[in-house]
Length: 122
Image 1 (cartoon, rainbow, N blue to C red):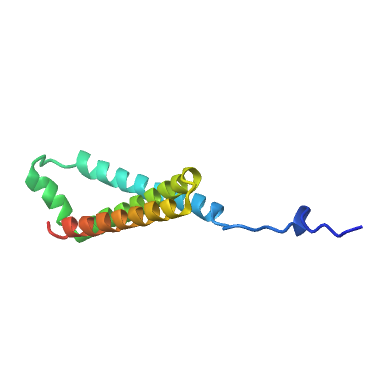
Image 2: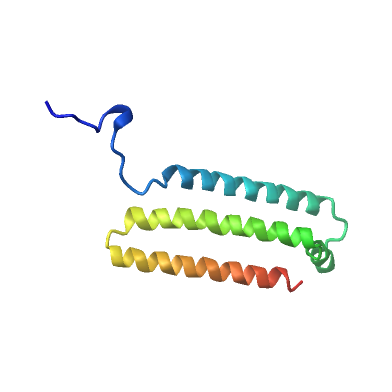
């Protein structure tokens, strides 16, 4: 009788092993974005100056720029996980999938750079 090591706790697991990590990363990034939304809403609802100067004044604080940048990085990472999963699930030719993944990474890195430039220009 052959010893079958593919049952129970001794099961041979192969693959990328990123499912739980990515699931958790999407939940954490969603919490970061939700907290930022609450901060933004509180800042907006307690503001008395609803002009461009008031909005720019809100973003003139270094802590608010940093919070915004962290929220945007969470958004970009959240988007990367979701779009990467779409490419992996629905694009079967490996070369095309790789091109789409690289294009997605370049786009998101470009958006991150643009966001930093916008935030620290105010």
